[in-house]
Image 1 (cartoon, chains in turn orange, yellow):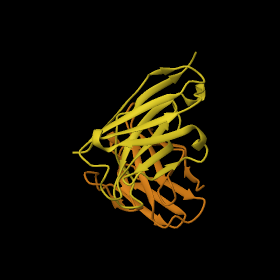
Image 2 (tube, chains in turn orange, brown):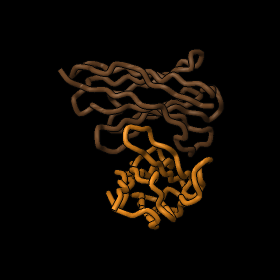
Image 3 (cartoon, rainbow over the protein chains, first blue to last red):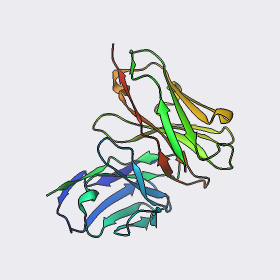
Image 4 (cartoon, rainbow over the protein chains, first blue to last red):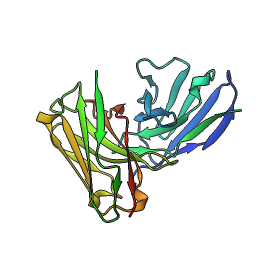
Length: 106
Length: 121
């Protein structure tokens, strides 16, 4: 099984901050890494697929990068609606989610 | 517009079998490459992928739960059914179904609202 490890598990940031979340896979997954946003009581929402492709309707302040085993989700300027939990997921071999990163208001 | 909705019991007893139904619209599960997956999330915890069924009736299961899961589809009814045997309180979670696009490595791009299942005697 391919494991994916996210860091940090939580972070505190202010509106306007640049935020970076990382995800590491236990083996190479090429670029088959996806990012989701989840708000309390809601289903996850796809933000980024194939490491760097922005899902339709997602603001351009969200960017993804990486390949192989190391990946990054960056929010260039944090907005009030971005406070949520973010999950990475590999889709190279079945599907595995990371443990999540909770982005909280500082 | 693709939509999915989960339905099933909100409460099951330990050792019972859980049966959940995902009813979808806006796509066909006979389209080449398309799949419907099930994912769960215990309260306050991370997402866990459970199973997926493909357009051609191919099936994939989480290795850790494979012995307890069965996924089936009824293309004519636009439904996917997940059964999980021998339920335990640790299986208490919100269960989601989600659409996977036709590309082999496509993500889960559209999710249902989820259904909360509590396992308790």
